[in-house]
Length: 115
Image (cartoon, rainbow, N blue to C red):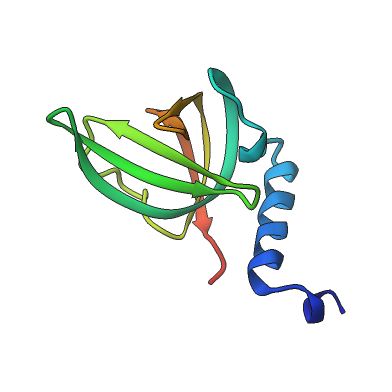
């Protein structure tokens, strides 16, 4: 019955939030500026960008409550950091250009998210 009145995106978001809570992480929507946190979710996108002439690998982590921009400075590629991978990140969150952002977090990768 739940699937009949709820969109697929809403179901996926609910599943992501439940998984984040299950592993003891903070929901992205609850993160404030200048806060240390552990978050868990799926990497939606990964791109290479230059930040002030320094290579930077940027990713978007989605946990069902919102998205977090993740930036690894000085990196062009990190093995396993790719769209569709589930990741658990730990680091310091700040607001950068109005977006919740985590720079150079510690990370743990797990199996690819269900397609």
